[in-house]
Image (cartoon, rainbow, N blue to C red):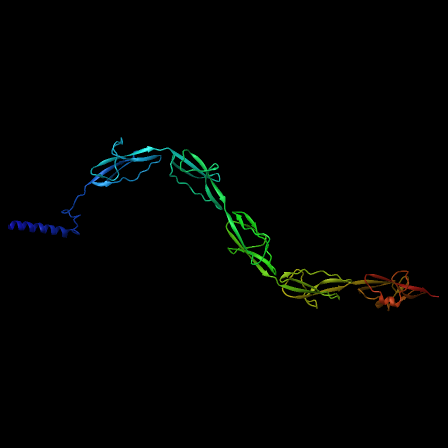
Length: 395
């Protein structure tokens, strides 16, 4: 009895020493408590190119083989022998080492070649007469894909029995074009346009306003008449500016009535070129002292008065002694005689002499009759002029 108690005591001591000598009393690493798990092997023979593999699973556990694929073949199932006489049922319990053999059935393949605008786009290969086919969905900028066509007929992808080439059919996109004329009017507005086509922006009108520009939805500006390529739906807003008129008064400085022109503010003004007998036009000025010239074509921002400047014509007058002398000369020249000067102003002091003759007056022709005093007061210089001395023979 004492010996049995002693043996029990020794056994407990050994157990405790085993626990303290390890990092823990985990029975999975303690030799006194290890439980060995039995396994079985499964050899998988794929049936082509000598491909095989071996795996291990827990004995007496259910086994479901992984999905396998082979181009050009349909997988039939796994078998216990290479003659495929006994099928392995997926999920069956495996209690010993086994070998499994994959069985395949050759399938006939067909190829569909997809063209976009006559160029290769994609190719798919699948089982003849199959219904599960991945059909590509092409993208073409500015167009809507309608479908694949075999000639003029839609392509039926559910039962393809031979190799075929099909082509994508598209319809061009049509975009809406909208205008906000801000109260203006126009004869015609385009309402829609096809992708990549051009529209010409019309010229709107609005009473009391001038058209400035169009602005699209992205803030881009366009001039009237500009061509716009349509790549998406677009909107255009007309921008107008109120018309303000200013007055330009033309003072001709020659006694004629002023002329008043009304023009749009800040528009350029083309001045006229007037004419005046006996004068040369010398330009328009912004003041009566002719200090600040106005350049024709300048923009006018406010009401202004323009003054015409004139330069009077000057002429040369020759007094011909007509056989006698004037201050010992056969003729006398007077330069820079203003237009409109009466001839009496420079003839009164002319002294002409001639032997046996007496000067009795002046004439505008060599052999003409002498002008009367009234005629001299009325005769004006309007061009280069020659005046002749008229002589009377002494008795």
